[in-house]
Amino acid sequence: MKMENFPAIDLLQVRKSYRDKIALEDISLTLSNRQCLALVGHNGAGKTTLIKIILGLLRPSHGTIKVIHQDPTSRNFNQLRCSIGFLPEQVLFQKTLTGRETLAFYARLKGLPTNNLDEYFDRIDLRAAADRRVGTYSKGMRQRLGIAQALLGQPKLLVLDEPTTGLDPVARQNIYRIIDEEKKNGAAVLISSHVLTEMDDRIDRVAILSEGRMVAHGSIPFLRHHIGMRSYLKINADPGTCGNIAAMFEAELPVEHPSTEEIVLRCLPEQKQEILRRVMAMETTITDIELIDPSLEHIFNAYSSAPSSGGNHV
Ligand SMILES: Nc1ncnc2c1ncn2[C@@H]1O[C@H](COP(=O)(O)OP(=O)(O)OP(=O)(O)O)[C@@H](O)[C@H]1O
Image (tube, rainbow, N blue to C red):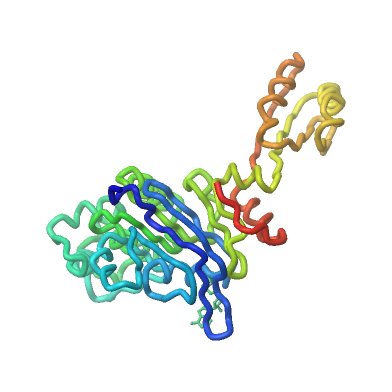
């Protein structure tokens, strides 16, 4: 099998305990190349522990782990380290070095040339400040420099812990664009984040950790479907039309009538098209239609409050 065909991350029944505290229990997870997985969970859910195990910084108490088809705690893994880009949650740099000197330091650690660093500064939009001392950088600039060091050497696996912390909306969009580019180049990307709002369209899969257990694992549409979350179809029309729509659907669906000129149908994802078709066929005057699918945040809240559903895969 060619190297590119191995999953970048393959965990089976991983457990980690710190003395009598079980931080992770029965975690099985795969991440393929060209995929982006979001690892989400409340404080203390076990995200950092899992990342440290993936990076070979911690040994699991039980289970098997392959990262780019090697055991990350084995000696051979050292050769693979330069194929992994890692952005830690807290990026600490030497304040007296310039951005360029900092990046050159990390490039040398990875055995990479230092004469092409401008392309990295361009990618994170920091070229103009490359020769300024890091001590003069804002929090967002330091975070972008951290991302640049993770990108050094075209990694096969990118592990980004809270990559958008401290970034303004434009910089956040730029990070997501870079993640897409890295995926297209064949990398697997693991993002650990508390900021769920902008991630819906950016990730291929999500793994939800709760108290050390994987309570859900799959694509967003799969998890929406699995937990039976309904979409909101909000329709604004004159009172007569709203009444007719309510009469048409109330035997089939939960229907809410927040005002005489607004009606909300709560439907399953697979019902959306058929409902829209029937509404549009009514030959009435509709002033507005808004369709809201449950977001990653809604899914996370639903799984976090649900009794353990035992790790669901798609
Ligand atoms: N060195 C340690 N010794 C003992 N317990 C630890 C140690 N490191 C972590 N833990 C415990 O393991 C559990 C998981 O911690 P972890 O740091 O992995 O969570 P997290 O999801 O990354 O949290 P956060 O979002 O707050 O960073 C927590 O209950 C934590 O207190």
